[in-house]
Amino acid sequence: MSKFSTRFLVMSVLFTVCLITSNFFVPRLWQVGHTGFQLSGAVLLFPVSYILNDCLTEVYGYRKSRLVIWLAFALSAFVAVMSQIVCSLPAPAEEASIPVAEHFNSLFAMVPRTTIASLLAFICGSTVNAWIMSRMKVINKGKFFGLRAILSSIGGELIDSLIFFPFVF
Image 1 (cartoon, helix red, strand yellow):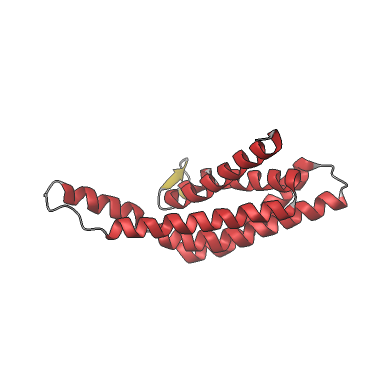
Image 2 (cartoon, one colour; image 1 turned 120 degrees about the vertical axis):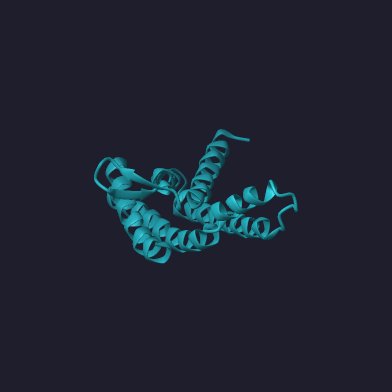
């Protein structure tokens, strides 16, 4: 495998892993300092997916970036369906296994809902992010990657948040 395709593959896999695992971390809230302000655990991974999306768009173009977005979407949907199937399996009759199954199911209960919200929000946000990044690259003649990455991520994450948070919380 060439260096070009190896890098593309690694970035694509990391992007997909960030998207899928962030759906599992949504229910875990954490408090920011002593402010009383809470954030979802997904907030730690989600910006990484936007940075990777920016890098994919910058290096491989808007078309390949969109391909990765749609592949990540499909794999995330697959994980959500499989988590529902596993949660619906009956727990063993042994008394010790029942609490484990209940805890497991409560952990994964929000996965379909967060996945649907995440996928819808992420498709819109990532597409906006990649579009802004691509347009700004043309306008700026390939210069100012840092500025383009920041502005496109702000635009993408804004759209994402406006869709995601009302749906889940």
